[in-house]
Image (cartoon, rainbow, N blue to C red):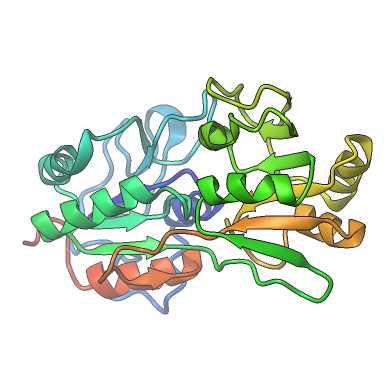
Length: 291
């Protein structure tokens, strides 16, 4: 069984770790299931992905997981199992990769705003008849005291900004800074794992940091840099992000960029555990090598 996991998110990492550890918590293993392995399975070879070997990589018997990263972060955190970095070359390239590597299931666990790869995955999966699942954490919901201003895109957020504030905490990622580059009258605090490239706002300070960030840290940033408006994407997650809680406490407006929709017809789950259950349902009764 070969599963291609389009990753780069916390949920993708947790799913990869769960599959690597054999934590398939969807009930007792059945003969031929992902937990039990295929009947008459051969012992793992030295250096294979099934156990032992060079690097100590282990995966559940009968299951091989490849995590694919876009390569936008210079030093990504290590992941279990096989890892590939870089694009596929559009729909044609991804469809070819699915065929050439005998992929049995495709899980899109990319960032909720990674629209291009999600739609490419939907088209490639349809073309190759590969089962596809989208793993998307729930979106954020405003609570009492929140002052959120909706925006359909980064461009719309940039249009709204001058009427809302002057000192901006911009937490939308380094790849979307071009939308804010024309706003010379505003000052921006940008947080990113890697240095952003041009085009970007002229009046900008960059914090090179990797999360997660606690509430005290977010409070301190808002105070130290005299922030009067925040711009963020609805990346979502359990509870409320500390940056949003800090903005609520400070009475700051937040321009919230809505996430794009999941491609039509693609089933969606919210947690890695649900993704495991989907895998069990789709692949649990098939032994490796079955058509």
